[in-house]
Every structure is written in structure tokens, then in C-alpha cells.
Amino acid sequence: MPDGKPAGVRCVQLGDDQRCRIFGRPERPACCSGLQPAADMCGASRDDALAWLTRLEAATRPS
Image 1 (tube, one colour):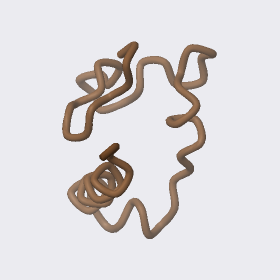
Image 2: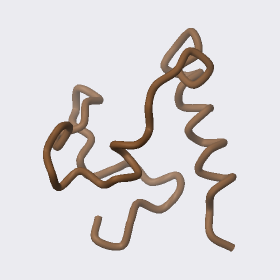
Image 3: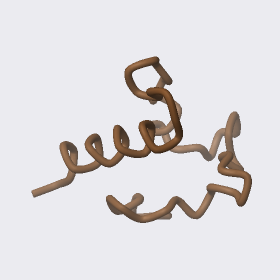
């Protein structure tokens, strides 16, 4: 995604298994590498984690 990943759009590097295909590789964007999981981010379920990411995308969306 040369122009970045728009909010609400699934990353093209996310595999069918929900794992990043470029995890640990140099081409992985800094914004992804800098995102460190934490209990408040992950919550108790996948739905909790996706809700957190949705809020993060909304809060950091360019005007």
C-alpha cells in the first residue's frame, strides 16, 4: 500500500490466517512495527482488538 492504508480498509499484507505476511521484514511499515500489543489494546477477544484499532484509525485519520 504505497500511499498508506486508509482507515477501515483491510491491509493487503494481512493473510487469511489474520497474520502479517511481512512481519519482521524490512519492508514492514514503521507504523506497524511501532505498534506494540498491550492488554488494553487486545482486550478479551478479536472483536475487542478490532474495536480498539478502529478507534485508533479514527483518532489518527488526516483531516
